[in-house]
Image (tube, rainbow, N blue to C red; front, side, top):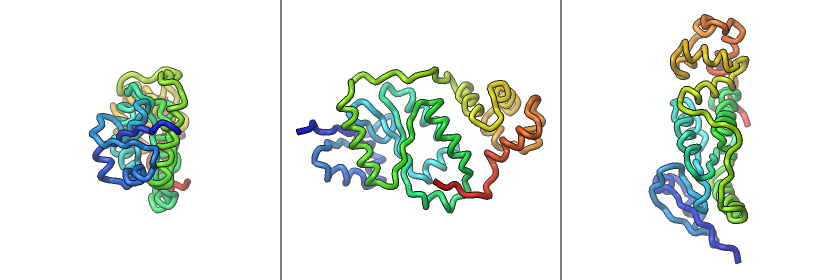
Length: 221
């Protein structure tokens, strides 16, 4: 018989979803509800998971919470990953550019080393968590070190985010941050304001503005 799966669930997450009830029906899952400092779930004491439904993911992306949460997850000694939950229909009525969401996912996976898994709903999320727990039980208890160097400090993170934009390398990213001061101010800039930055030019400014602001087509998955 397999060992019981140990899952700790944040009490705020427990109040807002039906996943606790789904775990209760899984005979091999031992669930404890408590206040977690980071993430929504701790799995087998080896992994920390942040669960986001589509509206929360988009809200946290545009108000700046997403990457702050990602940094806390990345700084955890546990393996970190994120589940993005919701059917494709939740994206279709929102005027969100595909490039904006792809850029966020790339930043999470490449910059912070946090894999992003897709789930259609609570039942699939519960199954993914259970499967993850079984995989962790089958592997070594020592979490592997993530390859590559992680950015240090907010400025470094902002530079890495900017380099995921079209036509932006490290030199142009640095000029944009020095000119606008923050990523938030740069994203709010007009094409003319972006083009006024030395070394950016009209075409690059248009590419940046298109990726951040254009909303004529919905994001589809």
